[in-house]
Length: 199
Image 1 (cartoon, rainbow, N blue to C red):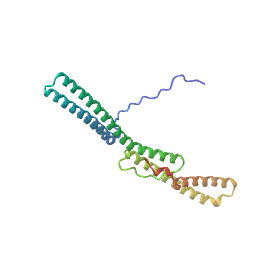
Image 2 (cartoon, helix red, strand yellow):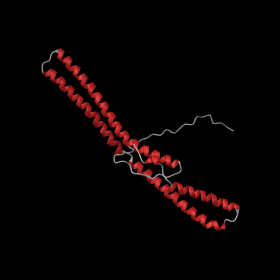
Image 3 (spheres, helix red, strand yellow):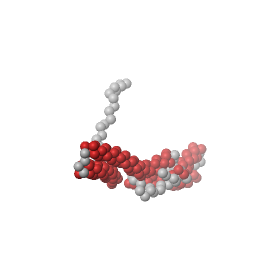
Image 4 (cartoon, rainbow, N blue to C red):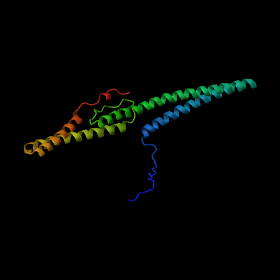
């Protein structure tokens, strides 16, 4: 028995596609750029006006120093306002993304429990719509396949029922019956109530 002492190396993956969802990414890139650029521009214009007013009035060096303090205060206040606006923008953005992710994680938990969730549409301004639609379509197709398999199992059981004369064949039919019941319960059973309310 030979032991390979070489460490396993993962292949280096280079991602060359930076805009994987261009509509979503560009929309928020431009919103954040406009918010940041507009805030800096506003602070710059106010600072320039304060400085220009001090210079145009033929201010003394003391007045110019006061003008510099005003510019500093404007810059600090502008930075605080920008930070607050960016936090609010981040909250809105993350809510629009985290909401669908939260809903899909509940759906995945329902699927892991052996049931198929009743899918509901996203909220009006939620993001990740394309991904959510593909996820919903996949769940619906899997549910339909399971329902079709349950129907076929019913036909097989009904056909073999009269022929099951030995204990082994009756045990096999019992296994098929429990498999059919599990598939029916998964596709027709009640879903999790936690899916009704979403943040």
